[in-house]
Length: 607
Image (cartoon, rainbow, N blue to C red; front, side):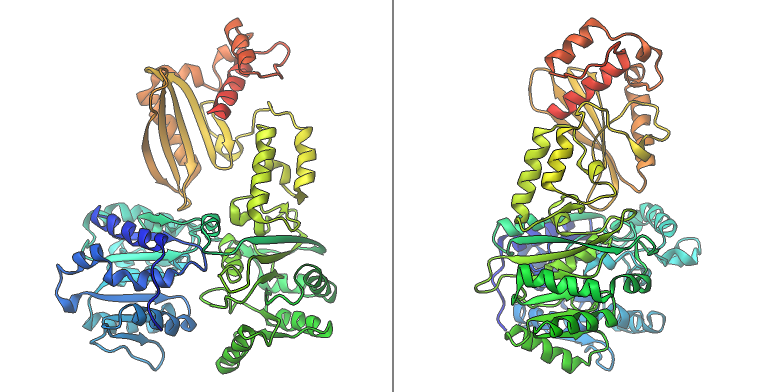
């Protein structure tokens, strides 16, 4: 295997890592879609000039790299790519009966190996080796207890003993992660800065809602899936949503996703499996296909349904012997098998670029898992110009099921009918521009609609109804405006223009507060971030309002939700401004408060 030429975004990722390190941050996250060569990026890290210069300040024996993989199956694949990029280095594996050489430059191990026997395996490695760079592949797992404990041993995170003896600090519960993040504020001031931690993932979101800020300091680089498709590094997606009559209403949740045993009982039925085969026959017949199922029995049942219909289909799972699995995957890649049904063995690290259809027979609430599964079909391959994605959409009014539209930031409840995702996104943008203020997410709440059905709903929507603040509004003293999912704003006159205070969620799942001043003379906007890293939206909202109370006291009466002036009749000046802003739905006997809200809404949308 020869080292591949780096693509522009891979060079940019390495540059961003080096820049973050130079800026004093040494726990960095890189977000890049499945299929864009994350392993190639970190394989090239050891010869990237800025990182090489940083390494050269240490003795040659102290420049070693540790790569932590999520599964044993990924180890040899990573070793091959790293050795191809760095043929002069010794690359060895620590796993099972295999023990890394003490002279190795790069050691690759699974988290299961490192955590074995209460991390004794990792401790033995550390007794003879100083790791300068640690890479966590599939880093969305890094918030889990085993990862954080391992990173504590490696000196990147505080251990339980360093945190007042809170022994459960490594549990991945929401409360304990809060404790970890609080401890990190003190830890960062004293933590070793002579080492680098880089996490690589397709998505930083987790199904249990625990953000990765409990491990990483910042996202060094983010490459969006739709950009990778537009740039030609992944194939376009052609999605089909197939509605079923299967109900998931009685299926309970476990750690943010469905209880797998209950889910399998609900979806592994002859009727639903036959529907999956029929949908595939109509939209992707004979296309090399990977089908994702809930459990082993479901994988075999769906493969049997395909075989009964006359197609070449096999099932693979963790129970399939390794040599048999490799042979089946090789047969698939050579066109001897049309469909592989699998249970959680092809979600990460599998390189089957011939796959041109992804069949989602496994419902999930996890955006991370959904993107991992779908990404298996997006790699480039000769003669392949798109990937068909078939989603079986079950009845789940209480749950938000992931589906292809979510990959482009669209609502997952939007039913796709064979239109490429980029076109679907453009049409939805056109609908929103045509019906400003129409809350797409609210319209889709509890139901699935096509774009045509959404258009019908938008045409009857009162665009000037003030959006509800939901849970963000609880306890708020000021009159915020909701502009979209997880975006809340206050607008008010200040200094020489209009200032906007915005609370929104970032890519790490945390909340930030950003202040923007737009001068009245139409000069350049001035923007600064007031605070970042809030775990709860309520705390971010309280902090934002505290800023107004302390630094913008004159604004308080203007934005107070309970101010007496809000009940007075709208002023002539307000009514005139509403007309200039072309607000048609001015209430009869409009109050000053109603007029103020409508003005804020109209100006926020215009901006």
